[in-house]
Image (tube, rainbow, N blue to C red; front, side, top):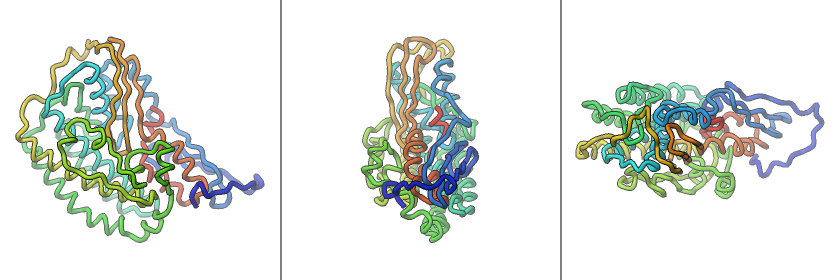
Length: 380
């Protein structure tokens, strides 16, 4: 039953009961809780309750040097950390007037799209598990690990890469790296038909997810929904195309959409996005050998860097939706104020509470995961 069609009824208190989903529950990417009140198997009300893991990043950043925050921001979204590094760096570069070398821009896009693929693979397995299908979880985690291998080779870190810094990237790619990434992309693309058979066309998954957790386009815009969750309602908005940054305006890619706005549609959008990310990565791999030059602009001593007075609002398209940073500098060695506009803050609270109300108990977990939220973005 869709939330707007649900008519709250007055039940005797003895006929209602409460159930906690979390704070450790597979229905969302991380420690998070959803307190639901039920009448039978129907959700009468829901309350999102975060605050169990990474918290308070915005305040912590005020006490750290500009460069030190590069090691902090990836933790705001563990499955997709690269957009956090890039967006924060873009804001500092905007305030400081730093000109990022062309090669660094292409290297950033390669990382961003690999991170998007890794995040979507993680999502496929998690969503499948909420419907009782665990093989896709094993596949998704194992294939994601192959991408983490490349990140480890590039940066030395598997989960938190800390590779993008104000002015560019820390170092150039190792010898043979592009060939290994290209072989990985070939493997992942060859795996997609198997994922189709195991998950996307599997009637167990289709019947469980199709028509469940529906958001129409008008609701999505009113609620502030972004990213794949918005594109699943038929609106093809993507920051990479509609407000391009780095070198996205030089690349050829499509913005996948679906019309039904349900859990299944959100999964299909991400499946198509994975293909588009492979397409983008191949264009970067083809272009990089001809793009020489430095990979970072000169910056002052990072341990005594007084970023000029100014403010900046920058945004990128993460795997979860539109991610933005508002950064304010008063000319000191540390940020005066940082505000993170994480897409999960809306998806995991207001949208989730509305969507599960009127639904059934067995659909709560998959509705949670279909929104693909990162809890630390809520408690940032």
